[in-house]
Length: 427
Image 1 (cartoon, rainbow, N blue to C red):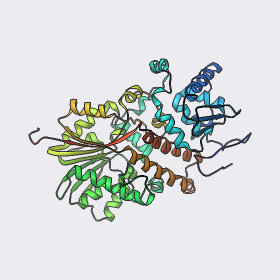
Image 2 (cartoon, rainbow, N blue to C red):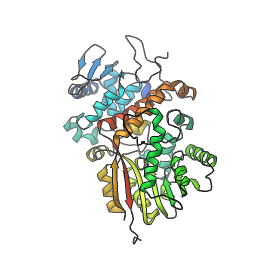
Image 3 (cartoon, one colour):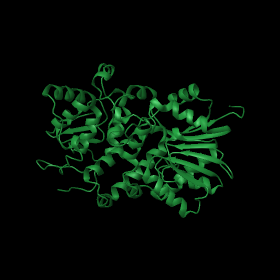
Image 4 (cartoon, rainbow, N blue to C red):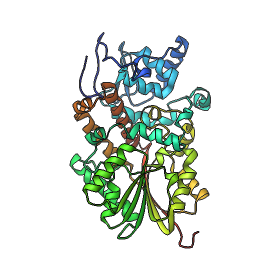
């Protein structure tokens, strides 16, 4: 049975069951994990302790309420909710949402509260024992050259048509830079072009500049760089993105200025006056951050500039969760990890001859970008269905966009534009 088309507001009452979840496509969502009553009870106690201190209103199926008031979180199937968290922590919390065991009329507001208190949701004694209870990241998600291809394909090769449903006409899948906030959908394409032009200005891209782009997306940055008269080599691991980027480049009459290569950043050759990379480092993995930045250094000609856009998280949280398997890694971005500002500075300083010349943060703009994407995705639910994505996928994608938006609204996440320079005398 299908309920409300908005995945973030769907609820079920009384004995009505939620729509069936495909157990083949969603094995860990279709049924809660088997776990002991004792473990479920411990999880319930930990959850209760965390929730009762938060500015939330948490309502359980029996009418019990917790919290200090605020956005509503409704727990429809408490035993399954606690069992999932007891077995899989925050992965279980996200899977419980996909299974419709809990819901929220304002999902972003609830997740923003949780993100703002991320550091103290788990009691300190359990935090110290994180290595014992937290799920470890699967070895298969390691971002080796072969692993990176698999990880990137998992997300970016879903369907170009899917991304086109909620992205603006530039097909930019990163934060825009708005003139003013809050923003309107009609302004998003301009905000994306402003973001790209700012990066190209920071990298001093002009007529004749040799540009290397690491992470093509669907080609908008390469198109705008070539329109300035630059020669662009752009790298991607996504077949879907490469094919559509080439179509867009050919349609713009710029195929003679842009080469789109299906290539890992570690395989890049040559030197360039400018290197640009937009929200690519998040897919690299901490193990390979030194390799990534050494590649930027090696590919950049003396006197050149790197312009980098990166999502960042607090350093202490990065250290605490660096080896932990997360809901985002399981369902959205396998192998992904956000760096901290401190980690970027440390890796660049220890492994390259680059100098951090500038860094600007604009996290509030990402929150607005994500809101616009989420609203657009929700509005076009029927078209998502028509592409063959089921209701659980729609709920997953809504949770991902809301979860990300909440991270920026709470200040837990930020997004930076960096400029790195290389001295003329460097060798």
